[in-house]
Image (cartoon, rainbow, N blue to C red; front, side, top):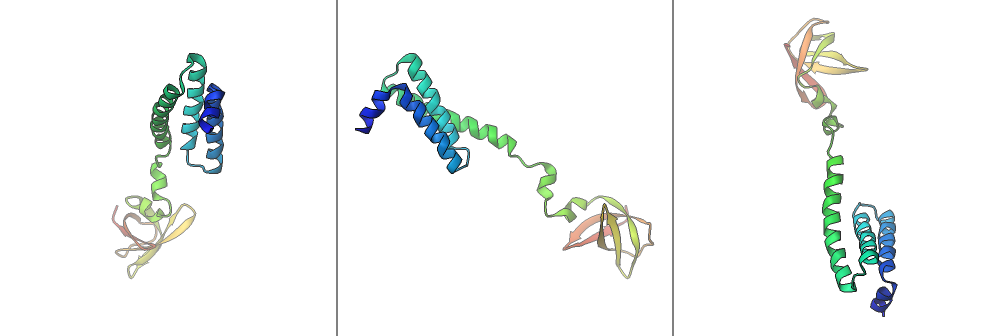
Length: 149
């Protein structure tokens, strides 16, 4: 019954299936049904141009689905690569390791403070006077460990 209705529609059946699959992508996003929908629309266009049998059209659809999904994954994966700064998101202290800063307050008894942009960070290290240059060598919790630059 369904097969007869699908065959009687011809190329339009593939185009309708493609539109439905793209519509499913709107409901269940993930960039998967989009590629299947585009493969179905391409199959419908090929069927209209070449007058394929339903078996040949099904085979073309299967090949186009695999091709479209692989091609789509490579296109979206290259855009989804994290930027180098995004890797340190929520780990700001780690991004400060290796940088040199000026002490805001002197390091007395192993503790002091540095200014980083608009924030002040607690630092530990050897005693130094205010205004001395220090290099961040590691992070321990929310405290920066500093040494000579």
